Length: 151
Image 1 (cartoon, rainbow, N blue to C red):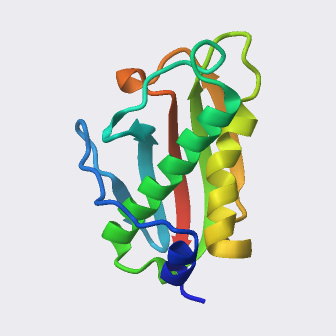
Image 2: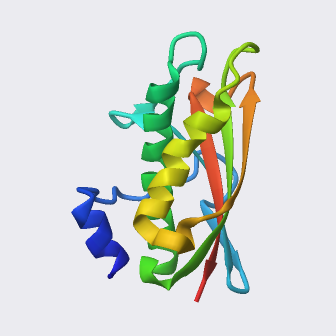
């Protein structure tokens, strides 16, 4: 099944890929590996600001992470032209803007990880890191980057 058919079945329409917010590119390829820059959570087109453990709960953070995964796929599509070229999602790295006491960064990040597996099946299973951080640019609640192997 085409990745685009799967996205349609899930009711997901890829947005327009975002432009970089500073001096970097959104995606860089070397060989058959694509490195996608960190994407922050957005809500209604604006940074989704907040801190997990203070003003955002785990389930809301998980939804934010899922939204980031959709944005990452939009950037990947814009960069490689066809998501069916994805051979594997290799690595996901997630930064969760959280209080010192909050310890569910891994559960927040599941929002992205589970979505990638829904879309790509076994090719979406990946290595992962999830970190709690004191702050993310523009006060965003979550930032995620991925590494992808393509054909």
